[in-house]
Length: 290
Image (cartoon, rainbow, N blue to C red; front, side, top):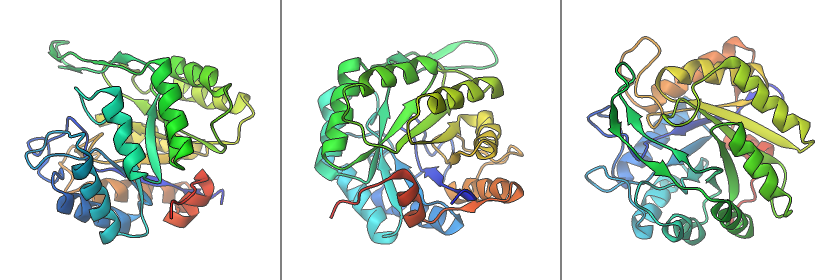
C-alpha cells in the first residue's frame, strides 16, 4: 500500500473556538457531523479534543464518551483518535483515565515537557504562557496503559529531544510495532517547520530499525508545506481546525472537510490516494477492541 496516504482530521483543538472559525465543533452532534464530512472528503481518522457546550476543553469521561460514541454512530468506519492531553488544568490521572475508560482505537502519547504557549507572532508579545507537562513517568505509564488496553499510541514528536525520550522509555519493551509517530510543527514552544529538520526526524526514526510509520501536522501556515513533505517522504498527513482554521489562500475553511480536500489534492499530485479506514488500520497495526 505504498501509494496510500492516511489523512487525519483534527476536528477541534483545546484552544480552538468558534470565534476562530464558526465550524469548530463543541457538542457531540457537531463533532459527529464534522467527522462525517471529513470522512466523505477522504479522512480515515479523526483526532478529538472533546469540549463542553460553550467550547472549553473537558476531561469529563461521560462527555468524552458521548463525543466518541456520537462520531462512531454517525461514521462507524472511521478511526477515532482521542487526545490524552485533554487541555490545560487536567491532572495526569484525569488525562489517562478517559483513555482507559473509553478505549478508543488510538490516542495521542506526548513525549516531553515543554512550553506550549500563545504569542503574537508579529510582536513577540506573550498572550498565554503555559508549560505542558509530560514527564518520563507519564510517558511510561500512559504508554503502558494504552498498550495494555489495546489503544494504539500516536507518538507526538515536537522536536528531536522528544524522540530521544521515547527511544529511552521504549527499551522497557512494552510498545508494539508498528510504531506510529506524529511530527508536530509550529506550536509556540516547539519547533517551526523546517524541511531539513523534518529529514533529520525521519532518518532518526528509520535508523532505529523499528517497523514504524510517521505522519505530520503543522500549525497555521506550517500545515500545508509540512503535509506535502510528509507525503513526498513516504509519510501521512494530518489537517484540521485544531491546527489551522484557514485554507492556503487565507480564507476561513468552511469545515474540516475543506482542509481534508486540500490534503487529497496534494496526495493526488504526488500519485497517491487516501487510505480507507480499514487500510489505515492495517498500516498502523490497530487492534480493534470488540
